[in-house]
Image (cartoon, rainbow, N blue to C red; front, side, top):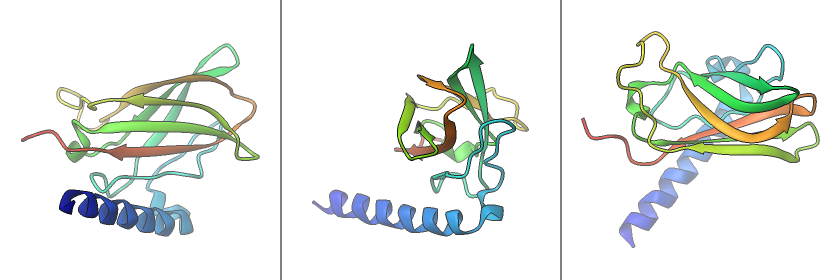
Length: 137
């Protein structure tokens, strides 16, 4: 019961932080895209300076999302990506379990998340959640 309460408090704190981050675009710390736009980002407490976002296309569909600039503290956690249309409809999503950052260039610290193919012309926002227990040191 105590663990459930702690998790609930952590989730509420994370949502509060996400609201503050959303209120100031400068605080997103680099969630950006050249083509699709990325105005929504949920950044877990393991990464306090934000992440970058790039999209991989197959034809006219977004099929992968590359999340970069990830802090070492996020290693071993899970990442969930959701792509939204301008009207808020979910176009696609994907999950990467146990983020592997070991051996990745310290200046890059990126990983890919495969997503349900999503029409790139309709994609307007992306939400990223990094959560779970961090890898043991």
